Image (cartoon, rainbow, N blue to C red; front, top):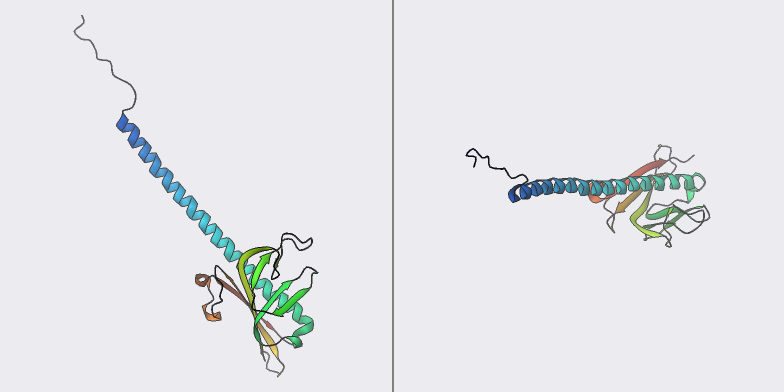
Length: 178
């Protein structure tokens, strides 16, 4: 026998090394998943904010277009709703139902937000506030139009409290009588 016989070293990983490696990989995976889920939630929030800004701006633009021929017919009110109906006409009406629906079925109306039910409930509400005031100082009645859009809520905050923290967007426009 050879006195200087070398012991053969076992090759491979011990159970403890495998457990530690799995733990390290698991912690890394959980970190990545946490970042991913946070990103998805932020994207959804930004999508809602962008939609609300667009809907608020659309509200004042529709009132401006409607008022070009009907400014004298606008009254002080804080309960208007406005949208383009299925016949491509602007509908401005007093109402207490401010829900917006997304049209998916009527030809020519697909992809349009409307107050008439029949589409998908979007969770957005839009209210138009019209204040008749003398903006240019010449004694005629002009109009200040405010379009407020809320989401994740069924009530509107005051104009002063309309902000991202209240899930509210607002657009305003002054309409000067010609």
